[in-house]
Length: 275
Length: 275
Image (cartoon, rainbow over all chains, first blue to last red):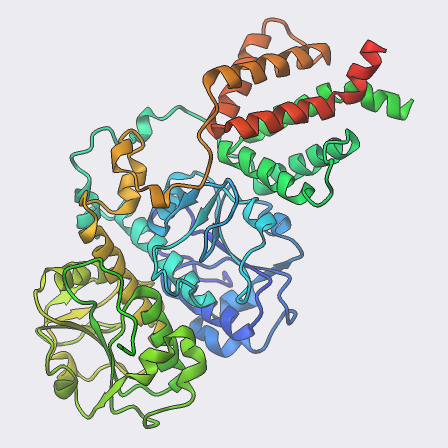
């Protein structure tokens, strides 16, 4: 007997994984699990929860999401937590000084449905949100068009908002009757809109882990080549490079090609080093 | 001077009033106020709150919604609380044996926008939900298409879900182009529809010439590093690398960074060559 109930059949894609990065309050983790249960999401991953794990404070707030809490997995880094994820969206109340792609929640849900592989939604700690380094790992940064006077959602509220948007989109994608008629009908005049059948056929993007490893190698080689002249600027330059490649969403094959590029460019240098 | 900030101009109708009927936990009232603030709703009405009013437990959870808590008004019945409301929607996790009209959250938001007068969203107590008598006062009963295994949202989550749906609909209705922002973003060929405020803060892509020069240099260095093992395959590999970078649409500044990457990675090699 499966430990977790399976979501009812509704979309071709699996529900997105929820990744909570350095969550502070067990109560919020529990409330997030309840919101996941409400919307039919089941895979909860925690990166370095502040108060350790398991956390008894999470259970009462989870309500029938208790199984989700019990089966939550813990990681030490975002890269590890996203090891099998091909499309990762980072949530933030505010825009960043990062050359990432921005999306809103509804657009992100469409992308999740359109992406063949496993998707993830990543949320930062209550007080501070995600680090820029964490955001730079993501395919897009999601900001919701909330009240500019106070756009900061409670953590579990942010999870609900994204899980709900995914659910409505997934139901619409699988429902013959079209639950969200007004959305489906809204853009009927724009024939120039993207037609998935006309999109170039591309391999699925590499996993976040593959991309992270490529960047770790690139950064190490750049370091060895004296690229980072100013140590204070190095983190920002690395983030910008990561964001640049993230925009291209390279496939596994392309990541492999990029490893070959590094190898070719550093060939003599590394041979000298070992010689 | 108004005690409450006014919502930014966005829809012709006022934001809906939130009516919490016999709410039990002050914390939930506070969290509901925060969700209202996040979405630009300001009028909170309480019908017979269990623990009386004011309730100090509501304040910490309200965050910057504290003014909403302070200005909340208390009534003894739904009829009184809805005295000035022309369109009232009742929220429920479950359907009732009542001849009411059912609606989903998105449809309800459209109705709120279409209704000239003041609208209200009514939520029942945490444990039991609204009485049938209370539901019968409403114009429609809203049930969200949530996980049938556990459709029961936390009270503040239900408020957020409805407030968010109203906000997205209201933003779409006030958009001059009559499009929601995600629709505008989706249609990448129609630059006139794009909302610059929602575009990623990025520099313009580099010219084709700048990108071409970068690739010529990269290809020459890769050639020197023995990257192109098979001469017949070289043109295809080069094209694929160009396509990969083209997808990222690098800016002039980024092209310059990429030149620096080539220089750093080939540093010793080229020094040896010239030495």
